[in-house]
Length: 373
Image 1 (cartoon, rainbow, N blue to C red):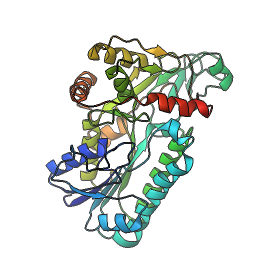
Image 2 (tube, rainbow, N blue to C red):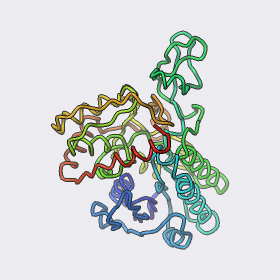
Image 3 (cartoon, rainbow, N blue to C red):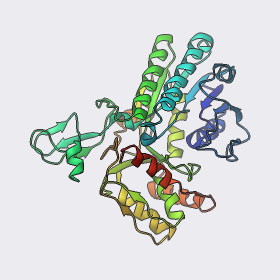
């Protein structure tokens, strides 16, 4: 399928790489972005967004502006959203307005004005909708649910325990049919977003899909946004000769995937046939300990600091979640191509010339003042 693709959130970290890859594939591309000052302090079109890409500044909640951006569009990749678990727990209305209200506005326009032309709908979802990922008890077998009680966390017993025998559970790759759980407002909004898109797509016969992103990293992710991904947060701290702040004991794991692989998977989904629809995990399939990540960045940046392991926990945090990517492998033949080592090297090369204002203390104060740490 060739034609015009609208990328909401196209001025952002993931969106800008997706726009580039779509252009390389021969698509006309229109990026739509509100240039949120938390991510774009200058409120100008990002210099990294290629000039070959048409850019429209606007808010996904604005039906007039978004309606014009949908003109002559054949496919939509909906990335625009407020992101971040902790902040969502106190900026509840804003997260709900943007993520759910903005998606409702988009789908209303698609259903009532543009559905005859649109041939693909893709929405960015998140691994956060799983809550804790998949686990297995060495004695009792697979567990559908894993929880960590408040009493357990206060006792600094970090690993989820089997509810039958109380042994620590072992993390396993998480499949798309794993029970969903909204442990934060952000997670709830992402789940609603994907259900809305797939429902409207099914109703009007538009092939629709939700990509459940795991921890995406790479160049262009803001180093001055204290609510962004953990790699950027750590890198901002080490560039300022400050220790990365690590909650719990640092042995919690996350699944990191390069932004280049994420953009490539989204392009493949746009180009796939009508049968490719539904929900897909998008990760590397491998979990990495947060403490190891911090130590690697400290070594690579020669900052000379040590991680600050707080032995405290944040409300809504999970212990482990790693993607099972069997479904996207089968549907699209997708395999991550960027190794973690190469991806980190690229991130560090880019970050050397970037300013990093460390506002993590501001985010920390916000969480503490609300009893979320």
